[in-house]
Image (tube, rainbow, N blue to C red; front, top):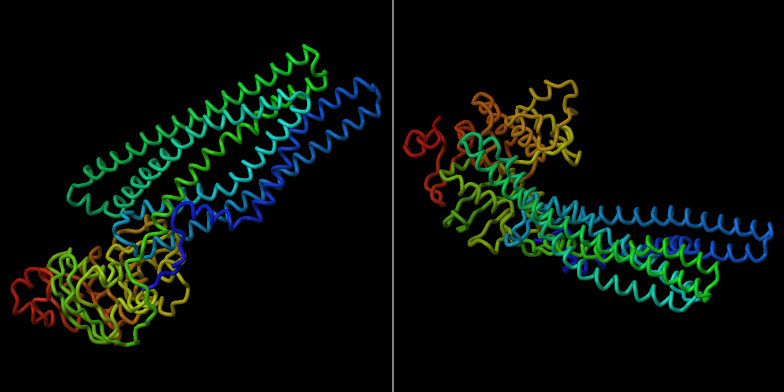
Length: 566
């Protein structure tokens, strides 16, 4: 099966090169403007030194006025170049971060190889923090070049006054960068580990939120919280380690820059005292020694940000390079075809075989929850056809010959824990805004009472994960979304476990009525849903052990009666 983007960047270096290549224009203009800013900043003490020298020599109001005008031009250039340079770079940075967030999210929504071992919380962290830090490379490179421009201008200006001052700046800058490059590598590795631990903590939180009610039900919430506290503590300790390394880096950079500035100032003072440079050159040297601190700080911090961007790009590559669980294909299933499971062996499933005819309503009573989950995963294309034995056919075509998009457009598998998004009831039921059966889906899922309860109706605001809805309301909202999709084949996995018995009876009848003539499979132990099905398949130990109507099975099969009777 195919995925939306088969030309994904592979290693982290490719991700960074892609980001740089896509933003060449913005980076060129940003580099020019920021270089002009740094050159103007450095030119200020140079101009000040020249002004002092000429003013003392000429002692004329004309020279003073010309000097003031020159300083005004320099200040204006500095102000405007900074404003427009940073505007260009930050716009490019924000845009690039958005591109990577969308790309990571798109890959996260596609089935990926199971050996990647990334949960949704980890992918969320990668799609936000890592995408932002990777895009920072757009600003880092121009700032690095512009800082280098300032250092070079300062070194040349000082060298013209006295070659020893110029050499001191060049040698000192090289020494500072050599020392800091060692620390920057440590920052990169520490940051990557911190991001991984924060992501694991985020994934643990997501799991806890999803399973909080069941955990409370059997008293496992305290153990779960202890587990989260452990991973959160690990993330905190790693964050402290990163902060220490960052502090050591910043302190070392500041100290070395101050030492270099002090050395330039003292050397210039000694040369002026010895008569080897004049008073204007001394003013210039002292001014440059102070002004050069800022470009030196930027210049010395850039390696750290490069390493952080690379570490984040490596984490993004985990998602972007993960192979899809399905092989490339382009076929589309025929409309109105059968759903056939032919000797499938996967997980707890053992030579599972059954056929659902087009337009049939079939219920599957799975005695083991794990078998139900394995079957739903296979049907949802979350498992590669290469990862299980046997075949799943839709409309007579093997699942491995169909694209993921085609399968999901033709067959919708609605999980028992369907995600609820921040928005409104309407946007959760019909995310694309194209469904023509929203009213029918709302009525069939018995979501009408929730709609009627609020003055805004379907436009009632829903919080992230449906935090302002009860468990039953969230489940009915998820069911309404599945019904509104009106797919050729609909597979529902435990759609009514959180609703009361009366509501469940009504939902079962409504779903059967709404889906009449459309292929529907319900994996459930609900007597109400089992009763409205055309036939029931009993799934025990991974195989179909019985097949009949619900009422006949109740009358003839004691194990079935014990498993589903309430």
